[in-house]
Length: 347
Ligand code: NAD
Image 1: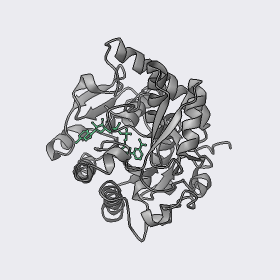
Image 2: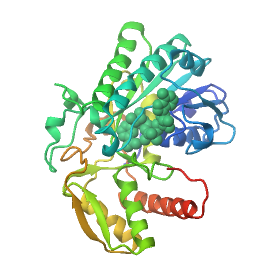
Image 3: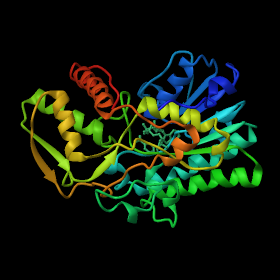
Image 4: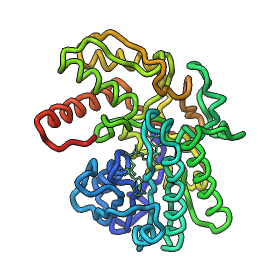
């Protein structure tokens, strides 16, 4: 599908307008900083609470600040002089993290609360909030063949406990800043994002990275088994990182999407069992599957209904899962080898 002539940062901003990105030491924020740098923007301020050596990516020429954005004063500093603010900072991870650490997830509400107020006070022109498909009503996601989620399915609300409710509340903040104060906000509900430079080990990783790592480990150690969380019938869709950064840019600069949550995700639905098969095919190995029925497995099925994004942008994420997973697998394999060789890696 050909994208419409959508407005983007490159057509709307001056190259030296200051772009501020919260959570830029992580996967999507780090990729977004690189994306804007590659577009020729010369003033990008990247912020994360992690010490600089632990950032997943650091792009040359980007100002990198180590600040805890749950603190109001730090948010003021972060937003000084900003023309656009992108909030990608959150304490989050895959199901293994968000089902166990609900308080940490809920506390991310402090980040958005202080960032949006600071962006507003700094006179920023636009504010972006990274919401999630976890904001949707869980009652609609019980079965693997559950209907794809459309934007109106968030209400009546019954979001994922902790993480999902934080997203829903923060979305509401964004909507009310526009309604009450005329501050332009944009909200994307991401469906699982994967790709190089994402978390691949340590407990916060999501299914595509975790399964690639397990296949790589099995090949390396000679193990013949792979452990799968749940019965493997649960379904999801997965969006490649390059589609995500491009989508963020278009959503942020679309006048029809002010204070209007929109899905940003792939609508290619796949079961976890089929995702394992794909990772095995890439790795050139077949493993015996062990199912851990006590492990966190999340909802039964979740897909993105892309009717709205197609209508408003004439575009939707389209990188084939097979291609994106191949890139991801190769990147994780290199990380795995580097770590074995005692080198510093992303985790
Ligand atoms: P990530 O964990 O890789 O990055 C988030 C970053 O935020 C981390 O580097 C973390 O250190 C930082 N952070 C956390 N608390 C902070 C604080 N108080 N101050 C400053 N920095 C802080 O996660 P990601 O995958 O890049 O996700 C980015 C955003 O997208 C998050 O809001 C997340 O909820 C949302 N999202 C991601 C996915 C996905 O599949 N990756 C899906 C839905 C929504």
